[in-house]
Amino acid sequence: FILWNERRYIHDSQVVSEVWESLINYKSCDRAYANLDGALVHVTCEVQPGMQVLDEAFNISVPDALLLRRVVEAYAWQRVEHKYTPQPSEPSKNACTYYTYRKAWLP
Image 1 (spheres, rainbow, N blue to C red):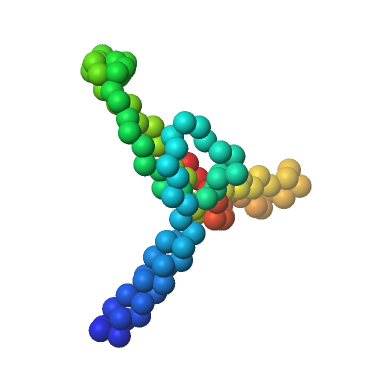
Image 2: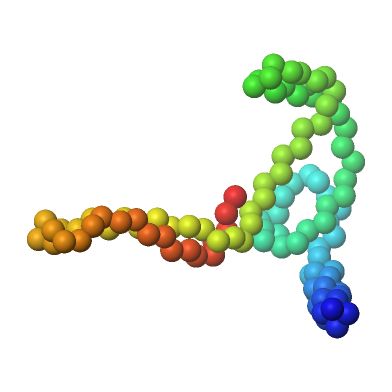
């Protein structure tokens, strides 16, 4: 068990080092740059509240609030459904549904 923990620690340390080396520290919030699409970017900027945020589903509004929007994708298994329907010439076969899985970027 200790050996497994040590290996995991070394692996995680290497991953963090690689991420740190590829990180782009960006100080401007004025606009987005297309050349940074897909890159790991750290952005720091000052924000000021000043808009009213409304949640229409619950009819709640908050004045002088900040509204944050986060768009995230995950590389995950995606299930693909396949349906098989036998031809009229195959009366001994049953219809069935089967699934295959593939990795994909999902919202």
